[in-house]
Image 1 (tube, rainbow, N blue to C red):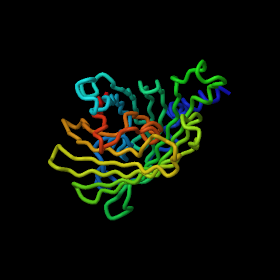
Image 2: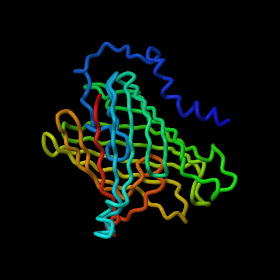
Image 3: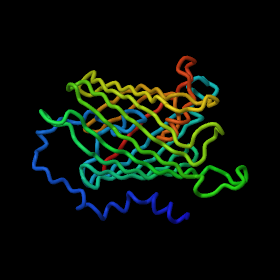
Image 4: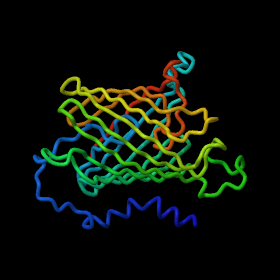
Length: 281
């Protein structure tokens, strides 16, 4: 059974051999479509509908410091930082795969992102992208959790990303999301969880925009100490690349983590400063 799950985890990589199965057959040119609703691959924590172009390789470093509420004791979160390293590749303009490793719970993750339909001038009004992930939580300890199996370490996510570019300066995105953790910290919490995400971008200048996102959890256990994730940030365009700075009440960066385990309270100043920065090869 362990090897079956390992094959599932690596499945997006196997799609490299299937490039011709989902090749684009449209004859429309790029001029027929609206430009991307978001400049970054992520709004902040949520995936955006932006895709990596065919044969592009992205290396993304995401960083979240500890809570700024700690003040000088932890130098406003510097001593409690979490990092995620993510490698992404465009099989086609509409199919992206990735692998990542996060220091939060030592999570390894495989991802698949597919554009289903694209917003078109005078045509279909939305861009719709599917995003799926499989993760392995390697921090779980069988000495603390007797009977722990490999399956207990697994988690899954699937979501639809639905965006619309209302004007050159303003875009919105809706993200209905399902995620499942085979192991949860709260006994009353269902392993399968549901979230409706909302995100937006407003362009301030030629190279600067403000982003906002929120995830409304639909079946969180009443006894759960976790809260809905709320984040705000800035996108800074620099020579074709986007550098993202933000504040969020969720330190985890994997989808299951920031949706299911956000702990910060904006009212108390218990938020985390962070950034996403990418390099294209």
